[in-house]
Length: 79
Image (cartoon, rainbow, N blue to C red; front, side, top):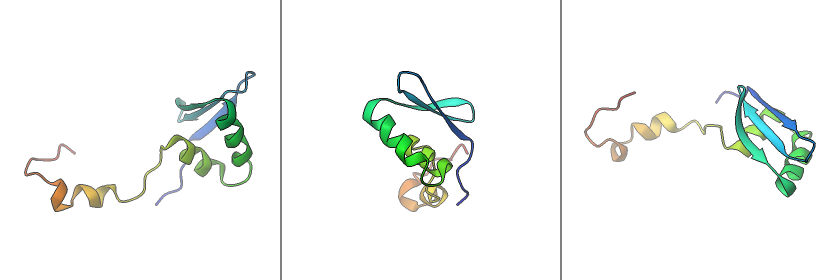
């Protein structure tokens, strides 16, 4: 699984944290959630922390799940 990349964050004067992914807003954190995020972002891999907080990361099993017989209903997949 590739490492997450393209995330950045900005802390506003009112304490709000805006997390962006490739220049687009992915999540806005306020209050206690923003404080928890800021405490965690300096400790580990920043890209992984931001990906986890936004939910914008993949688990690596999407292709396998798409090809499972339960998920194939006889219609063609547009992908």
